Length: 269
Image (tube, rainbow, N blue to C red; front, top):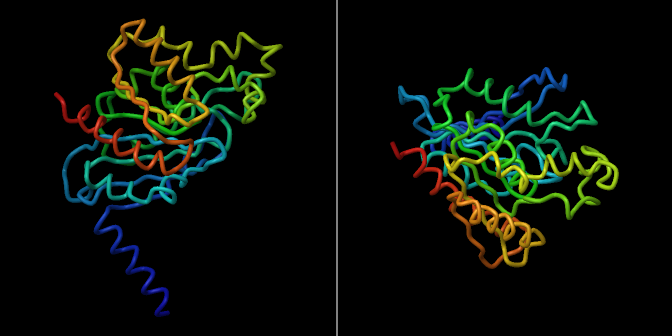
């Protein structure tokens, strides 16, 4: 009994200091299953009669919806520091956050951009417009954040990528991507249509963009190529390379830089 009471008091303390952590289950009609999502609200959420901006934060391949919280528990504090709601969707192990044309059980573009965003706006006090939403993620989630934001600029006004796989074509044998798009040799058109580096034609310069990669990361070359393509097209963006590999030590620093960028976006009239 004492242990249960202490546990309750601990979580009450965490919620009072940092805000509330919820697991929001959303029924996906398109995939016919219930999907868990972590939602962090700031400490002032209940006491403030206002709508809050929302950051959608995506995990990488092999990850899960609570990945960010367990690996970077400081995000609880960041929700409070920036007075934002943070939503961490579950993107399955290797969905790449797209609608698979060959696997009806993997339709994560529709799930996140339509079903999840709607559910979050219905349940929470959100700024339900593009100027109140941002999205970013790491690795597979970096590709996913740009993929979703580029295709749905009416939903997200700012997007980021940390160590993102911004061109999936050089990695056609990796991370089960072929399960979503078929083999590259037989389905090249699908790969061309679903790699982020080929979606820059959708950009008009309105979407606010930030991305970065470590110099020792296996995605560094595709990030450089993506940066060069945006420069050639005259698309404004914030891009940086710094020492680091494809790991949580790197992303723990990246998320802080992205939050500063998004805070500027959210607070600029």
